[in-house]
Length: 286
Ligand SMILES: O=C(O)c1cc(=O)[nH]c(=O)n1[C@@H]1O[C@H](COP(=O)(O)O)[C@@H](O)[C@H]1O
Image (cartoon, rainbow, N blue to C red; front, side, top):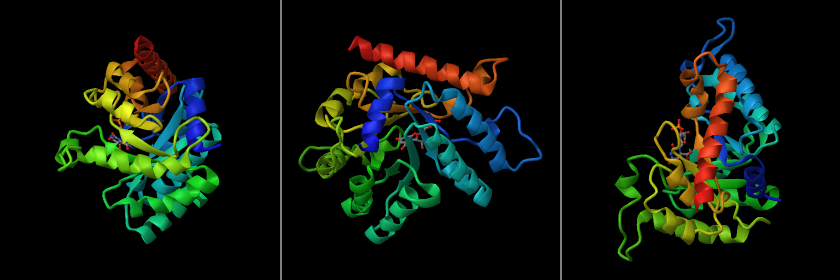
């Protein structure tokens, strides 16, 4: 069974919310001055994971928030991955790597084995397929997975991704087509490849076309919450309520700010439940 299969099963059981652990120290309601920044973040993440593991489909840990704190942060990253994986839910390491083949081999080893082992990683395809291929033996042998940036959530997606090629396709479609072709040899039992795509949820405009074109591809859909993505748009990227996980980071981490008097972990739980209902009710309308 692949990790994409596990993600599918997890969405079927708990729903599509991907809790983004992009934990910045300023998001914490209070800190313990006897602890380092990294230790405070681990304590916060521990309570957040405990509170949300029954209502989340997976976790995504954004490495930049941890790297920015140096060694203290990298220890926090290691411990956060460990705690999140111990919840039994699939864990995506949002590392967005994309380098030449030999270097990619080292990144794959770094994030699929050892101290920083994750179940699935995010990759950037700009340097070409040889920057993606070194991750595939881990998909074949250990069921690992990758989500490759395709049509992202940020305004800057227009700069390169929407450029039109001579054959009429957009650049993001060329990327999606090439990656789904590559992923065809890595199909799991639930009908999805271990090679998934990142499809931003801040617009629903191309949703029907994208979902239809990549039927066997699992999507990581960021943009809900702080970036303003709407459930009615996001539902269009799902496949009968599955086939995608919807990330919210700041919206969940800082849910306590919108729920006065409620503890941060309980507020995060409440936000996951609200978000899940919001998305599932839109999926049910389709
Ligand atoms: O790969 C990603 O996860 C990603 C792709 C994308 O197109 N847009 C996007 O926002 N992300 C990530 O998703 C998360 C969004 O965080 P919030 O906007 O706080 O919910 C961050 O970790 C981003 O790095």
